[in-house]
Picture (cartoon, rainbow, N blue to C red):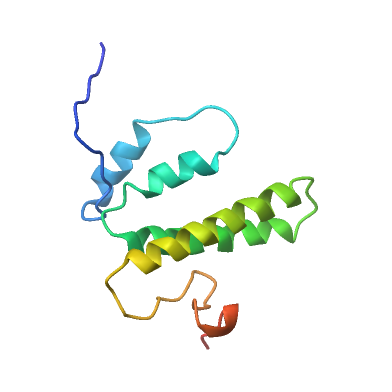
Length: 119
């Protein structure tokens, strides 16, 4: 059977995790990672701050790959650079003046460009 979805704009709202997972599972993108595709997916976030936080989390995960032997260091570094620039724009769009929550590794998006240890 053919499935047709008619939406003005697809948005992941974060209100219903099961629904967001279902929507994400309905799409697949062959080929190598694309920063433009990633930005398009992040643009679906209802709040710019959520997209910015997702970028920081992705950069945190990508940085772990830089600690391993890999031939993709330049690609990963460039991807992280693009993600951080995009995150900056998203945080500037955000109305919230609240500090960023800790990243999964226990650091914050604190001042001085380096995470502050939560401990």
